Each structure stands twice: as C-alpha cells, then as structure tokens.
Image (cartoon, rainbow, N blue to C red; front, side, top):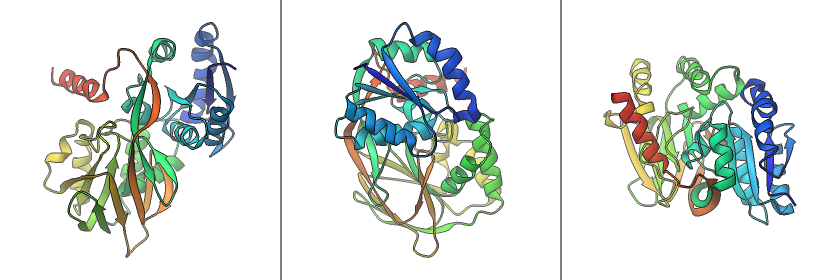
Length: 317
C-alpha cells in the first residue's frame, strides 16, 4: 500500500488544474512520493474517492484542486471508517480552506516538502446537522451564499478573487435582505433584516476575503459576522475592507460566537453554503467538532493568523 492518494479535479480552475498536475506536480513527485491518483468525474466524486481510499488504508489523502475539491475530500476522510490524514495542493480557483490550516498557498515545492517532512496536526471543523456536511472554512447565508452560487455557475477561467468579485457585483443588482434569526448557544439571539451571516471555523473565503478575522480552527468556537441592512453603495465600499478584516469597525457589522449556532429565515427561503458549496436553504444548525481532522502541515508549522499578520504588515510598508 502506497502512503499517498491524490484526488485530482482536472476541471478545477477552468481546467488549469489538469495542466498543473501533469506539467508541474507529477514531474516533481514521481521521484519523491509513493502515490496513486485518480481524476474526479463530477460533483461528489472526490468525496466518494476520499472515503473509499481512506477505508483502503492510504495514510494521506491529498486534494488537488480548489476549495470545492478540498471540501469533498475533507468530508470523505471524515466520513470514512478508517481516518486518513488530509492534505492539499492549493492550485484551484479558491484555496481558502487548506491555507487556513497552514498548508502553503500555491507553492508546489513547499507543499511537496510538507508532505515528506511535515507534521500531522489536528484542527477543528464545522458540521452542518441538517445537511450532514463538514466544513473547514466558512459557512454563510444570504448575500454570501447567492454570490457563491453565482460564482460556482460562472466562469472558472478567472482567478478566485476576480471571479468572486464579478459574482458580487452581479448579485448586488438583485439582492434583498433576509429576516434572519441567529441563535448562538453562548450569547444573545440576533434577529432582524440582514444582508449576510458568516460562521467561521476559519477566517477567510472567496479567495482571501477575511470575513471572520477572529476565527481560529483551534479554539472549539465559531466566530461569526453578520451585516445589517445597508445600501448597495455602502456594501460595495464595505466589501473592499474585508480582505484586511477592517470591516469589523463598521457600525452595521455585528459579531457573535458559539460552538452551536442555529440560523433560520422563516419568512423567505435563504440559501446557505459551506466552503463555497451550496447545500440548500435554511434552517440549519452548525456545530464545532474540536480536533476532528488531522492535516499534514509544514514543520515547523506557522499558524495562519501569523502568516496573515505578516501579510498585513507588508502592505503597510
């Protein structure tokens, strides 16, 4: 039995992942790793492959693609009877989930080195009770979910950030707020018209938007962000602040936390998504699962919060 199994999504990033796999990854790992691989053929296949290969005994299941592929691999690993270690080549349209765990972002050589000499570290994940779905990054509903839905249906030939921004602008033209009820188990119920609700196990989504900048996948706690009703123009200006986490200073932004959070939109159907994947409509109950997934990360390991802080400091120079 070989140690590594690579779940490769050839259509990720507008088909670029297949080229990256063949030309940039395979030539480097053929002499360094004992691995098998298989291409995915459609939605849900990465999950089934990861689950099957975990049960067959592969030690590390590695996602090769973007966040959609990573989310499916995470779910396959966690739903298998035999638990494998998760890792990823972050080469898709969006790479928010593996990056939040501390897996190098877009650096193929660093990822290979971490697979060979790295350490195995446990992280929290979120879990959606009604949908029976795990997530590593962010669950969101309202404006966010409509953007994710539109982004998923749009072109993948653009970068994750540009693709997401295009979906944001298109959604703005038609969006109307939802009357949302948020019930965290550690605080007051939040209720009223909301543009969006984000529940973060990790800090970021949408190709680097730090919607939940205080989230930490090690504290057994969701950090949530919700936005009251504001004008379209104000929303555009506010979204530009999300990349640096400065949106928390806006008076229309509220935060909340809890390890069990119930969210509903009783008056109108409201989509929700996790890690960029649309799961359906509210209501949903989100639960943290502490130290529930093991990921192969670099050694020494640098928490993503430190990497992000360094990026912010570099911007100030």
